[in-house]
Every structure is written in C-alpha cells, then in structure tokens.
Image (cartoon, rainbow, N blue to C red):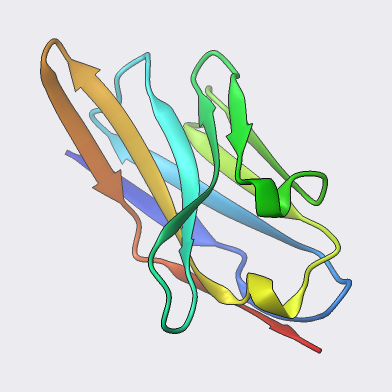
Length: 119
C-alpha cells in the first residue's frame, strides 16, 4: 500500500503563487509516475502535470508556462509550483502515484487539497 499526503493549498489572489507538496510513503517501487490532477466545481477531474521517476515531465496545455512539477526521489515527494494563478485554476488538487509490477498496475490518490484563486 501507498499513502499520499498533500499540503500547500489555500486562498490566493489572481496572479499569485502557491506551491503544493505531496509526500508518498509505503511500498513505493523505484520506477513510478507521480502527478497532480484537479477537479473544479462542476467539472471532471483532469491532469495538471505528471513526472516520472526518471524526471520526464508532461503538462496540460492550460498550465504550460505557469506551473512546474518537480520531485525529490530521495524523499518520495512531488511538488507543484503554481505561478500566475487564474480564477479558473480554482479546484481541488489531487496527488497521484502510478506504479506497475509486471502486468499489474497500482494507482493511488491523495485526499485532495483545495486551491482557491480570487479575482
């Protein structure tokens, strides 16, 4: 089992910045992908950014240039640095970890942290 604990959400004005953190613990494989998803009011959950244990990053088009994902493999922690925040970034942000053992895929989620951007 893997546990994910997020922190760093809050209320910020448009144009401001926030940094989210997600610490993973438990049975973590050496090779995995960690990422951040978000779910805004009345919307489906969507990928914000992901990063592999090898450092390969991917981003949603809507956040490119404003949001940066990074990770510290020694600490099993992933970060999301969010700059130039917009009201449409308001959502619950969820940390995700995916790892595989042969054909079996394991998918873990954090409890979510609220990010609110005021205009």
